[in-house]
Image (cartoon, rainbow, N blue to C red; front, side, top):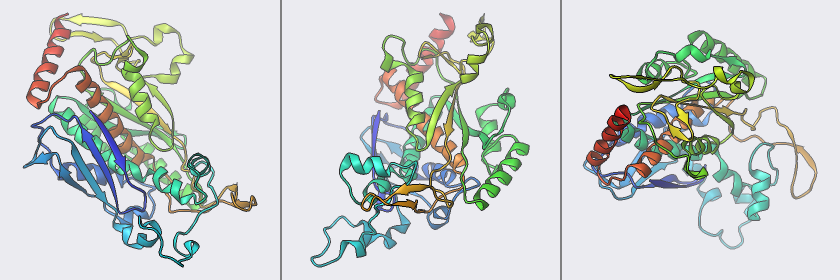
Length: 393
């Protein structure tokens, strides 16, 4: 399974094409739109979330509510496009038109963005050509792709949920979700303004986000994604590029503004002896093999263990500040205070939704690499056989 996305932040639409989804998977646009709405929510979001309500149009690959096995095309129209048709239009400018009057040319790169290095790489003197594509707006269709993946995973008995575990140093205890199912976590998260399972921590996060916004600053945090119901043995130890944790780490770090990733107890493993890190193996007739703990986050040797996969990502504060940082104009080489595009004070709750869907795609892709099936019923059968085999091994 693979996908590509296309589109600019203020262009007419964002597009994704997914290939490799098995046939006969029941799916509707309404299911995808639910996830798109979650991405636009969360306390701390900026003005654009009030301007647009993202909805998907399915233009191929699905007929009468079921996948065909052919490529699926998803389109999200930008409602704000009407204000940008001249600035972002694909056609050449008419003769005699001053580009500076139309294009809103940008020569002032913002610290922390792709502006300057992207301009160097692709030879753009107008840095709008960089920021339009490097914008986190692209994650809209990544969520749409992940929504398709999540629907597939649900059919396979695999559930995935994300929640916010830290914003600006206000953290939820690691044990907060112990004993909770993915459905129980989701029920809390979808009613919380910060997508957090701890209401006390969430209230403090809201206060901090508001204070940060008032100060003209931004704030980051940590999100956690939990995958429940995975069969053991997905991934491989035999080559570096087949390790499941490596693929999941890449997916997490590919999200805009994410700068760190960990599994299970993650970086805390550097502070304790091995006896407090590794998960002892147990066996009983009813459940087969299991672990006494899940400190390694459901992964050993680049493969799933059958326990919940637990992966965390660190999101830096958004670099677009209303208290702008210093930069240099690429034309005049003069210093200036960086310009402000519409921005959020904190996008960590929304980023948790993006992380959930980025991880969902990689999990679905890994399953389809291991269990080759063109039809959903075949895939279900193979995964059930794998679970039974692992139990009796």
